[in-house]
Image (cartoon, rainbow, N blue to C red; front, side):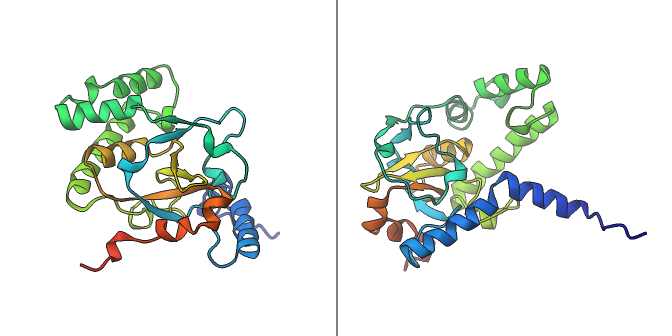
Length: 229
């Protein structure tokens, strides 16, 4: 009797694609290209931003949640006016304490918080053990040292690359080109700001049609590494 081949890696990749909503994003890309032409935004697209210039965070989540699943979506309306000044999160405070003040990770607020959650049987940020938590912050130490020398790399140049800039620092683009922070990759964003990096790769979020019409994406797509020296 014929038995279908069960390749675990295929099922894992399929599950990951569904979690990242790749089929929906592929349809969105096709629609955007038909509607807006060859310069249309792409889902999970990599753009380049000055992290110090991102001063506002999205605050309209209760009325219009905007997440990674909205990447590359052109959304009209006043959603981009629902913003609040960025304040340091627990992760950002902990990064500052560790990297600038020399406080061990185990004594930072974020480490204590995550450690307590793991002890209660929870899996914050998909961390299920103390070892996994320690490994995360060892990787972050390595990221800090690399970023000091080379800056932050786009996701395509990292070991955990999946699709375009999926998983990177997520920012939406408002009507006037204002970049609006929207969660995700908080540690990377904190490292970039603490090091005062002039530019970093980011994952494109939602885009206001006025910004698209003004050609804002053209500027954001320019990879500064390709600039003439």
